[in-house]
Image (cartoon, rainbow, N blue to C red; front, top):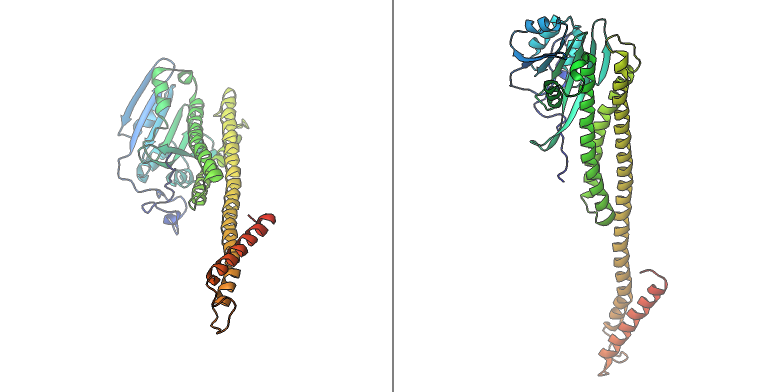
Length: 362
């Protein structure tokens, strides 16, 4: 399986420093530069009917939100800050919330206001097109009969939910807007499990490699997977905290019978976080095993080289002795002197090898 890659901060991404020295409540987009046009879509539905349309006139959003049916206003492309501000002003969204919507490096959180609930979290998914892990910020304004979602790109997060709305599959058409919020957050958490499963496969592969045939690149692979897990952990932990806040039941916009749904998503995030921690713990053990294995391998190489050097030390001594230029030397004129020298050399080598073997040095 190809190793997962990430796009964390690329060269065309505006950093948080873009807002430095600007006054509070400044409407500045912080994120990757984009050229596509913002798309505003309205899905209005109840148990009997559904209407879906793209709108150019922002005021249409307000008209639909005042109906008794549920209105989902889906905004794709938040890089047009002025239009985001225009939509938010229609629903009296606080300027600081608008600022958070435009800041794609915002931490996952849930904030309660008098007439609406603000939710922001990260959608983390694996792009089959780019063969990489990608993230986008999802921001949601939940009102009494409406929900406004803001997303950076036209990802596939909402596809299954929209399909269920059209087919009236399940109970989503008969529920309030808070149930739609639940479905969106539940779908995002399900995306986390998809990535965790992919990373789990990589962990199994790297475990097999570390145990049987580690090489110089194994440690880099382990570190790469650990970084992937850190990214997921960074976003899942605050998601748990946010869902725990909804579980308190203090918000009037969350019906009491819907709390169990959000509690179920909370349990899923807890399970996801535990799985990530288990993977991280295993990777730490694998890294220790890798270092131990490489150290043992180095020790074996050094032992072999040391044994070879030790064997050749007396041979070098004998060669030096028999190579001295003395006029009178035992066996110097003996026709078998050369063979005597090799016999002595072989005896020394065999004797040292027997000694090393008895000492269990190899």
